[in-house]
Image 1 (cartoon, rainbow over the protein chains, first blue to last red):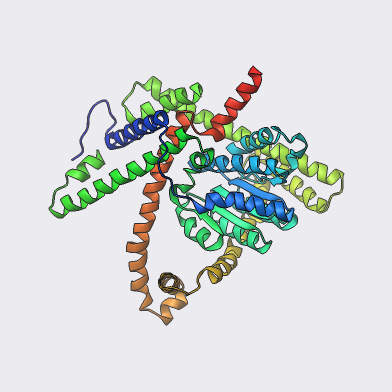
Image 2 (cartoon, rainbow over the protein chains, first blue to last red):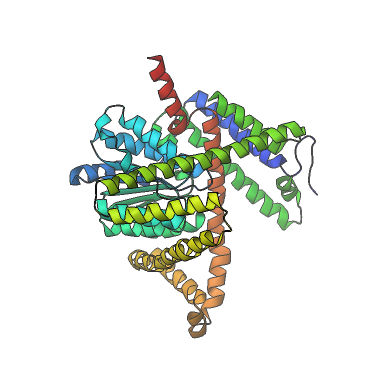
Length: 258
Length: 209
């Protein structure tokens, strides 16, 4: 049995409630700006360490928001947040930033982002040849990315965004050239592989919260609490569902299916 | 930001509510527009790449020969694909002789990189790492046909690990990623995600100056 309330589409009621609750909470915390305790995320903090390492070694940094053959998604937005932060740090430290592009939507966005950040103070540092478009196919892109790393020998490889099977290939070549590898992806099958092959990895929603974490803006930081609250609510519903189903009651299943 | 909110509303409302066909058509129009913009963005990247390779050939930089190969192959596929058709014999030959074998080769190389990553990561120096290593060993024995012959007892244990423990962990990540994506989308709609929205604000403030 599924609860259907017109004019809500059948099967979308629980999703709509979830979305509206998340929207209300996020809007409240943006206004409230009361920053909650946020634990340190080693992988995000390692970006500064990687930039420092590149500065000491005098080598470039390579950073990419991954490849997104089908347009901008949550992972690409998160990757662009980190790229934005990395570009700012590189400009401040007079470091060369290599940013290969591999998809559709971020090709122009990446170029504009990096150019705008570099032009804030370091016009001469902008080099469009350091932001090449390689390919929309993952293995062609990964091969070209690795070729760039083998030629340029960066000190740090920041690969946070849409990463498919080729991510292990890229991170291993990063190790081969002596780079510190910081990675993050929402592609579930890859998280374990990247955890084994990278120096630092962002797991789960750490990558999606990176933009807020790095901005240090109270309004954005406060919205991270929304994720935790929604997780707690879902855990509660999960436990309630297990208990009710143990007594042959399908109320929770009916509610979630609606 | 107003445009982001406007477009978001007209995508979310038809998804959750039963609306007149005109609104559904508008939503479909927005989704088609995104695909078209993405396709043109690929062209921007391709033309940038062409320019880069042409400059490399002109200046005879290291590896300029490979730039010739890239330009010839990529433009051949574009010209033949657009000019004739994707089902043309020459296009299919280029696809099956160059593109697909290249993909397959790199995919096959992955196993060596995975092995080196595994050799680095799977070090038994604590209880947790021992559990991880032996769990991985059972799954490896089950996946390889020779492993199934030599150690048939590993199969049921590997299936249990994959279908219960690994599945539970995967679903934890799925749920947390879904929640994170929703909150990220809401932050974007509210103009809080500076990576994209901040770019717009920066340009706007520069125009005001």
